[in-house]
Image (tube, rainbow, N blue to C red; front, side, top):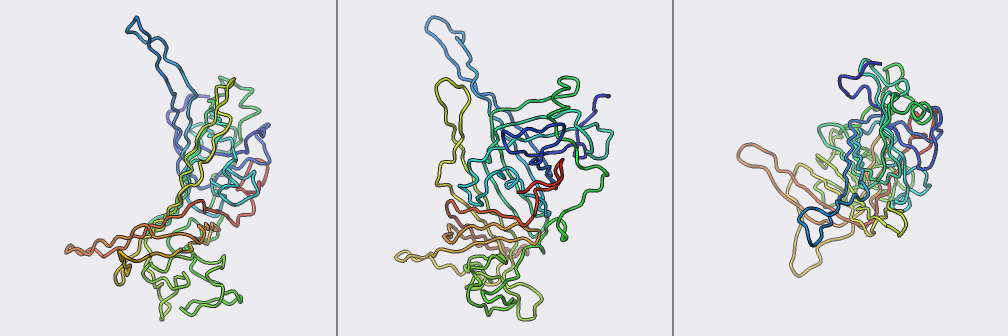
Length: 378
């Protein structure tokens, strides 16, 4: 086959497999080929340590340590498996600590640049093993697509081509699943946008509401996005209810971003060069940024002789299936009132909340997206 002139989006496919499992003849029942991927970036850092000696100016030895591999994946939220869940799917727990020890294999396959979709074995593939999730963030803007960003870290990668290592490609590569050039979002709502944040709630008694009158248990409900009541327009129960005429929501939310950086640390042992584990140094901070157009002021009092803050519950739910539970102990770290200048800008309120260790992500997808053998549970 002729050499590619370039590599672009249509000829790349990214997949994840639990670490230690073997892909044979392009198939693994647990391989998840990810849909809605916007970009995959791979950075390799070779760690060098210099040793000098008395008696000469020249370097004595430039010692090569363990290489660091960092993979950054961006995805639109579209009803298919989130990257975070696909990367940690061998653990049944939904909690952050439960999934923190999971490792996976990542494969980025590249086919000929004369094809319009990846429907066959790759011509070139990079294989990365022992990958841990290092950071996760979800962003839901008022203008644009809702997205997921995940960083994976490891110490091992291998590039292969048919010409270089044909047996590897025939037995270990992941076959393309985008045959037909007609893939579409798994969610009936399509790629998530501003209108796909779920502000519909269910009472503890099973009744729905669209007003300020909320029933017992609504703030504990797993249905609907729950936000702190300090945010202009959010009810005391954490709901974003509709206005009296039903034409809008009371809180004019512009953006929600929640993120956690796991800050992996390596554990080494004598007799082995590579780390045997990369652990999360708990506690880890979880941040949530929420911005809204002001309909009054920020209404946050800061009294020097008083305790000003209360623990708050935050839940984020999208209609495509994503549900992020940030626990009940989020506290307001800062609030800013900005804009409204003489140039005509609107006043925007930005709220920053922080908690620790609570970052539970679930999704109602019944499988991990299309795999080379059918389905693969998240």
